[in-house]
Length: 152
Image (cartoon, rainbow, N blue to C red; front, side, top):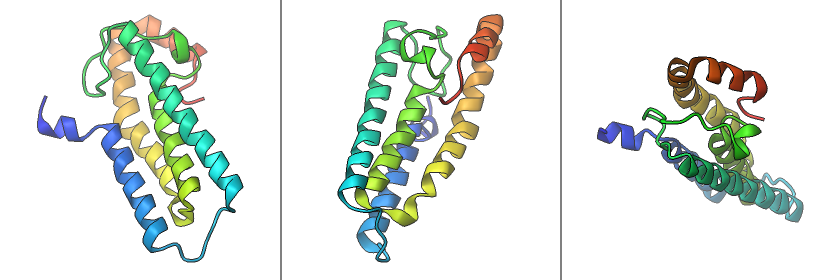
């Protein structure tokens, strides 16, 4: 795998968005706030829930002995566990962590990063991954798509 493929992975994009949000909250708060303890609580629930989703997905992918790396070809079509509820639990977890920390940090102006992040992940990672799965697993992947949503 090339260096570009190791740098161009969702955790790097998530970290970049988190750095922007944290910097915005620290240096450019503009006097805006989500509302104190309630926003902190909701932010904590979102971030924690996102981490749990990611952990469940990693467990299931390891159990099925397939790759976690987006640019590599999967050796199995994982449809069990959390993957029976969402086709992309790790990406959903990433978005939840981003939204949760934006709330927790009171990074009000960074809230648009969430839909931008979701759009980028979908276009840059999910669609190419689904195309590879569609070519490799054909009818099984088509049935999986019919019964399980991409996000939630």
